Image (cartoon, rainbow, N blue to C red; front, side):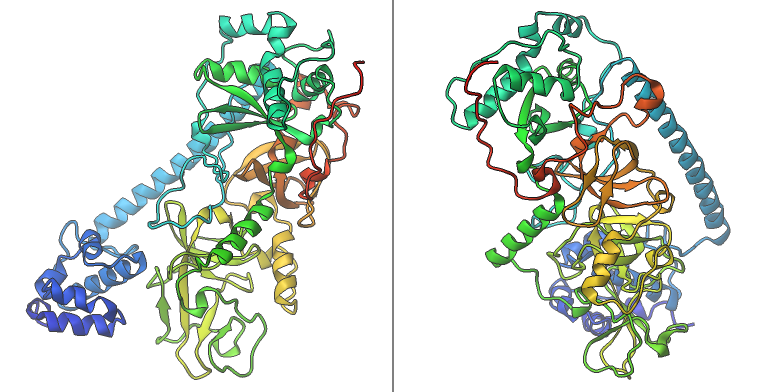
Length: 572
């Protein structure tokens, strides 16, 4: 074994040579300026490297990983608190015991979470059966916003761009308070005042100075009615000709907004939330203002390109896709997946780049992109919807991935030419852009490798995925009406069971339960928050005369009609 003092005797010049050998010569100046010698190198940690200007998480991990191997090479003991690569046991027996205990604990927690989820679902149904409406509790994540970030951090709470933080909804007591009982038993005018205020505010935004009621409220309308009953009644009260289905109600408190589904009771939702947040009010918005995630993505990408705020230069492997068919010749940079010479184990000289300097023995999982992302850093992948990946590691809100262009789980291999050493590139992607699955997508669906790149991505966007293959359990829901997406071949029948996995700008990413397993984005206000309502007998199926099976054009993603909020010529 090499003497334990060898690396300790390195000068700053020796450390510089070591950096160059690792291909990280851009940090030589900083290390020399701070007189980093062998002794100082051995005590480096994440904070020290960050102070030296190593801002890339992948580069910091690469340096710490190599420092660990230097200690192993020169026989330097690994002290308590020293950085150790994931999966490396420094105290064999003790570590194995800790790992076993940890795995047992994880299994117990997973079982406990599943039990709690089932209990919460039952509680959710019971509360609705008693007409006690709670705030939104879907455990979902929003896709990543394309706004430039100077540091990787957790997703922010709700913003105007549509982030939704489930924990922002107030926790409400199950019992109806006396104030709520008084509000729901007061006179008709007082009962409907919050809804009228929401409509008047919208009319004023449309240029009507002093809107006032022009009709009478239907005496059969009760304050605990759903949007299906109350919205038409309020529109009739003000003699508005517009179709009420072109509008959506929100409960707003501060910067937080809660979309109210068409089968929910808006006044009960309002008074319930007011018990914790007295300033809550109702707001009425046109459906045409609630763009689909696809429309938002296209608009943001176009704005980014027009502003000139392009991503920094990066290796082509971070934005190229691999050739899915075998290639006989390799010239220049070639992204190859089915290259015959690489079908077996990779050669020993294979280099791994990016945040993962070594590959795990088994991938964590697999993923398909459901939302595009144009990266802001040189260690991130550019992502198109339909891209497929192997998940290697997870951090808070970000996943380290390897592109898997053929979606068969083997991952892409990059060659600068046919004789060069293979390269594997890894990179970061926001977790909100991805749907995590247990098996490679090509093993679940028919995936012809001969498709063009455009046709392949379209196929990967629309290919059905069974609910039980998705890692997350999602949230059980029910489609209120028939819906067909304008953007992709995604259609849902009325009363079809769904699972909601993501939410963005008040749209939900759903997968149909059952053999069809279709998936796509759907407006949240067209999804029932009471998936078992028909079984409980508490709510009848929506009458067709109130909520038809057709969806307004604006909801389908097409440009919405110009909203004039026109009055009838005379009171009815």
